[in-house]
Length: 526
Image (cartoon, rainbow, N blue to C red; front, top):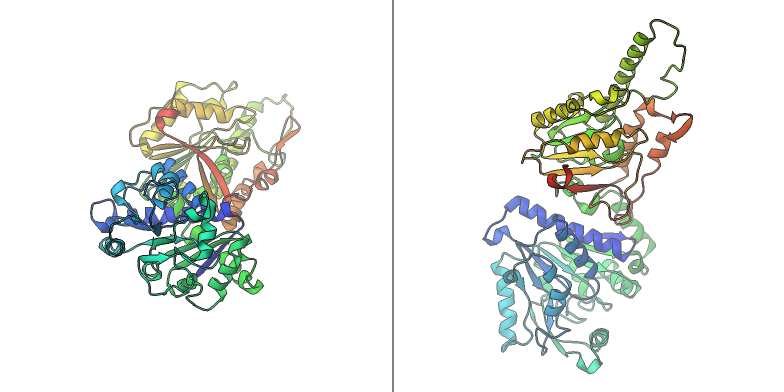
């Protein structure tokens, strides 16, 4: 049994939703879409306040195009007996209002118990039969009551029980009375899946949040298996996981908490390879082209994400659009302003050549440190950068068009922040003027050292752990010529500043992040 301890309810909700998203998408990648049951992912779902945050995040994933429920079949845990399906407090209404109506799940894929069935015993038998017909439940999500019950399997329930009619305890009725006008309105019976029904699932996730769940969680994790705390049954499941917050672990022994937190340090995001998250956007066979105004903007803006690409060999080019020869620190520049020598022009040209070679070599060393090859770097050296006034011409556009036509990428990364000399903006405008064939799927907009994203500007966040961040910082620091950069005697930035600016993710604590705006080509071109 795994125990994942997150800081807050919001954190556990996001983590759980991300895990479910990855499970569904991985299933679809493996089996594809089709009419037979093997193509469908079967999900068991609870009601109550605890899973609401998970449902909200799953809805957001769907709205962002990261997840579809077209091939998901759901089975809910329970339903009250004696109230209509359209009653405001029925669990059918709860699921519709909080989840189903916001996603693309077909109505025929939704399975809920009917508490007003003419024959309640047959309704329960048929529910079990339906679960078997679809091949069983792949993942059952559940909450836990303060007395340790799962679904309506209250203290004393058989651990070998299946879907059945259950008379509710006084404590459960009191707990649920907050949803009704008065306690006498709370139904006295419910239909519920049994402990065996849940245990027969291929995987179980149990959620716990708040101090009022602390005692139940203590019994579930540290106590013996007992029908007095039916949640303890999951100890016997080969793939059970508890996701909880700091408030809910207050009754656990210190050594227990320490044990699970130490284990968690060695687990990648949501227990799956981090690469799976970027794979929601980029397929294994997709070609990627990274455009970088200067030879360092790429690693500053997306040095973490570059380590998570499904296949680094499919990065068909890291394009340094300019060589950045004007931006070397004092250790690399000869500041002699004597213009009397007849060979000054030759000397200047030689210096420019040397400076450009320094920058390109630093760029190559930087991307090699991230696991790439020298020959993946494209030194475009666009002519506008060597012009006194840096005027963009048709020649610049044609050179970049040739690269696009040659490499045929499905995804293109474009820097959009504004540096003091406007080089980044000019590079972006060149890219906006290109003609993109239909094989280009998405444009990924990123920011380098000069600007941060404003709230709601981006639509994609890629998370990564500390070791990925450290490799990114190493890659940045390999641009030695950029250390302690000065322009007009005013310090505009330093790599120390850049490498200290990375923040821990709010949604995935202990993970860092990079933000992007992913747009279709039609929204990018002029």
